[in-house]
Image 1 (cartoon, rainbow, N blue to C red):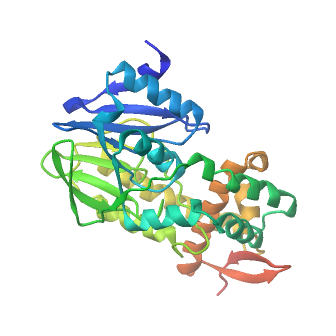
Image 2 (tube, rainbow, N blue to C red):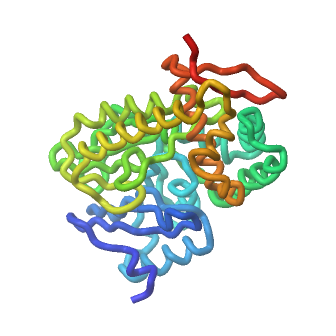
Length: 334
């Protein structure tokens, strides 16, 4: 059996977990295939690369699933590693793509024709201390994403938190979780306790909570509020976007809440009262090695800014103003 075929395993109920490859440290993203009487629903098909295309062609052939059997494609959120193959699959299957209206709008803003987000994000990072010599590298990194989400789906239908949605022979309650991605959807089977949670809650690793210009002004607060709401669900098995399905959902939510409070306290300790930019603090937290990896630097810097915004809103730190066009933060005095 090929490596691609081995990356697909059968779960309870005839579901398939497919580990679609990623060229990043996470190695793969989980796509799920749910069967019903009409065929299959495909959830989060992965990042558009030649490797991912080959993966799907071989993996589906090994399971004797023709492209025509996929009738629906569900995208939990607009990030390229989840959304990127949606249009590619739609062209080959004729399937409808389902996502939230906020996620659909975000995909258009970030990956649509004439997008300006790449420049806006880099300029915002520069105001938060990104060195001039890294500016073009960050711009080039951001400009490389449209090809990894193309072609984009032409037939998109919208679902929102509070809706009921049927797939895999189950009627799901649709939930939202903000902070990791605008308009992120989760699907909860109240009778069986299953939760398709995308990247809202992950085992072993913390979802990236990144600030971005023109987006949620306080994404970490939104994320923490979403976690507290999700913790009330009675989950027997959670199916995440990365790593493997896991049972201890409520426990994991508690761990994530504690993780971010520890991170906030650590950032206060590092800031002191002298003042640092987000980039300077990011290097103290994650190391200067990030300068050689724009992908990881983008995630780390966006997450650092998100935590600084939360500390500022809580009154634990204050902005020192802008010196030479750069924002710095320090412990709130008095």
